Structure formats: C-alpha cells, structure tokens
Length: 282
Image 1 (tube, rainbow, N blue to C red):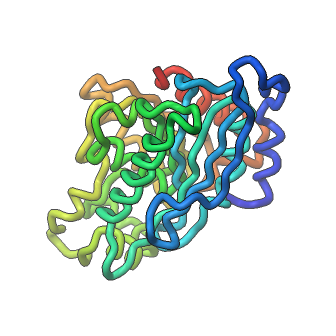
Image 2: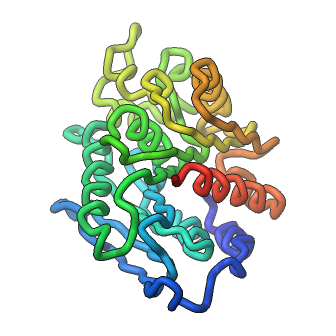
C-alpha cells in the first residue's frame, strides 16, 4: 500500500460511528503499542481496544505484507485506526520473517502465539477470546488464509479477510512473471527450492489446497501484477465448489494497491471489510 493513500482511507472511515461517551459499558478506549506476545524481538503487537466494548465486541487480528521477508505493522496502522473508529477491537502483529531457518510453519506459530496471548488477556482487556477474524494484506493475507484454514485452534477463527493475497503455489503460478521476481522470498517462506515437479512443502503452503469451512472475503485488483487476480479467483471457485461462504470483490483495473487512491474504491473496500467482520463475528 502506498503511504500517499493512507490518509484518504482514514478520512473515509466514517469517524461519526465512534462514540464519545464511554460510560455505557464501563470501558474506555485503550491503545497499547509493541506488546510482546513472544520472546523474539519481532514478536510484537499493537492492541487497539475501543470504548464501550464488551466480551462480544468483534476482534480482528491483522498481518502486514512485505513478501514474507520485510514490512512492519505500522504499514497497516491506517486499517487499525479505521476499525477502532467503528468500535472494533484489533491486534496488529509483527512476525518472524522467512529465512534459512524460519519458514511458513514459524509464521503459523507466531499467529498461534498471538491468539494465545489475546485469549490469556481477554478478561483484563474486556475482549472476546474466541470466534475472531483474521485479516491480512498481500503476504500477510497468505499467512492469514493458511492459518485460518489449516492451523487455527477450535473456535479461534470465525472468518478471514484477504487483501490481494497469494493463495496457491503451483508450477503454473510460480512460472508467472511476478512469481519469478519473488522466487527468493517464496523459496525462503516455503523452505524448499522451486523445482519441477514441485515438492510437498509447496502444497502445504498453499491455502487454496488446504481450505476448510471458514467464511472468506477476498478483495483483489484485476490488474495486480504482483499477485495476479487469478490467485483469489481460484480460491473463490474452490470455496464455492464446497459451498463455503465467500465473496470475491473485484477492484476493476486496480493494481496491488487495490486502487485506494480512488475514493469510491476506498469507500467500497471499507464497507465490505466492516460488513464481513460484523456478519461473522458471532
């Protein structure tokens, strides 16, 4: 996401939805930054708790992008700010990057630790400890999808939201120009070299090949040259074939930034995200 469009997204977050009176439920707005959910220096989260929250208030765990080897939670702070304005609690987490010694399994472990930390502190924070939503952007969306489908604990995740995330690592996808550029980080994330035929780790790392019954919102630009639109389209069709609730939101002509510079697109995306969170945070 380009920094120049972040303030636009915030401006479109309907700030009037935020309540000024925090006495109804006896909870005040709280923002806790760089909370450690593990012992590694990268295992930090920003916790945003809205006023008037209860144990049934929706909670979203968020994952930034960066091709699995870069990025920071600060890059999607604008989304977290918007959720807070709408009375939605959120945890925006950093995670250990892909390397010679850490692959997607380590990222799954980090998400699990973050959820465990939320559950451990749910009573003190006055937040829900189950049926949470996972939202990711780009590589973070891949992590969110894979965790929601294949690694979640019982009643931990009620829905997942992917913003332009890769969903499958087959020979066809890996031969695309974008995947060729991302060859090194993909191999680091999977923990195996790209060969023909591909080895089992590429299947294990593909959310679209490990789907389970988790309601899934996919938002993708049709002209994305970093992660092709077909990646989300493939997953949507796979979910549809199993009658799993899902929605694919096409952003016509948009690239990997989802066209957020267009006020109409930004408004529509925010509306879709809020709707999915509300419907599936039961």
